[in-house]
Image (tube, rainbow, N blue to C red; front, side):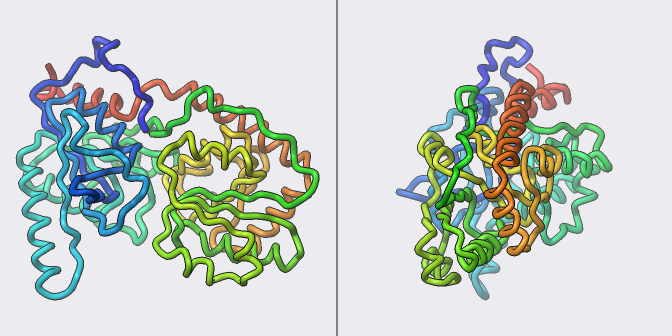
Length: 392
C-alpha cells in the first residue's frame, strides 16, 4: 500500500480543487458479494489520491475470477468511485457487445474527467492513451512493467504523456527517451521500519526451506521453479518449497511434478494480510523469484527486510537494485538447471548466505530512507504544477 502520509500536515499538499481524475488500472476489479473490490495496495493509493482531489474514478476490467488479494471495498473509499468494464471476451455477438459497451463506458469517463492517469502496460491504458490524444485530454503514466508482447502504440503514448512515474531505473531509462518528466515511484509496499529484521544464522543441515511469493502462473517462472526442485529431488537434497500466491488450478500445478516432489511442496493461496505473511518469510532459508518479466517486484524488498538470501532473475528493473553475488544470486530466465545449481551453491556456502543477507539488510534500510513521498503525492505534485484548473 502507500506510505500513509498525512497530506494535511504539509500546506503545499492541500487538496487540489476542481479536479476529476480518471485512473485506469491494469489489474482487474473483483465482483464479490454484490460489491466491487480491488487490491489492498491499490486501495491505499486511491484513498490518498481521493483525499486530495474532488473525485477519482477508478476504471479497470471486471476480473472473472475472485482474487483473494482484492480486500479493499471500493465503495468505502471516500472520493473514489469504481467502474468495472466487461472484458472483451467470449464468442460471436457477446464479444462484440462487450467490446462496444466497454469502449462507450470508457469514452464517457475520459470526456468527463480533467486528467487521466494510466497504469501501463495494459489494453485499456493503450486504448485510453489514443483516445486522450485524439481529444486533447492530458494524461500521465504509471510505468510498472514490461509489455509482452510489445505494444505498437507505446512510443506515441509516452511522447505525449505529461509525466511518467516508473517502478525502477530500468523502466525509468526507457521512459526518459520519450518524456521529460520521469521519476521513480515510491513503492506501494506495506513495509515499515519495524519490519526490518536481522537474518537468521545459516541452517547447518536440511531440510532447507525455500519460499516463493507471487502469482502462481507461467510468466512468473513457476514451472521453472518446479522443474528446478525436481532436479534437487533427483540429487537427494532434503528441502521443502512453500509457494504462496493465487493459483487458478493448484491440482494441475502439482501434477506437473512427481509424487515425491509434490509431497515436498506446500501451496498456499494468496495472503491478504501482510502481517500474516511475515512468519512464512521468517521460517524460510531462501527466497526464490524466477519471474520472466517485471517492473520491480515488492516481494524482493520484503525478502531483504526479513533477512532472506535471494535468488532471482534480472528482468525489468530488478538489476537497478539487486546486484549479483552482493545482495542476491542471479539466475537465468527459463533455466531450471541454473536455478537448481544456484540453490545448491547457496546452501553449501554459509559465507555467501551471510553476505547476501547482510547486504540485503543494508540495501533495504537505505532504500526506505529515500521513500519520503507517497505515490499519490508524487501524482498530486504534478497535477498542481499543471496549473488551472488543477490548482486550488
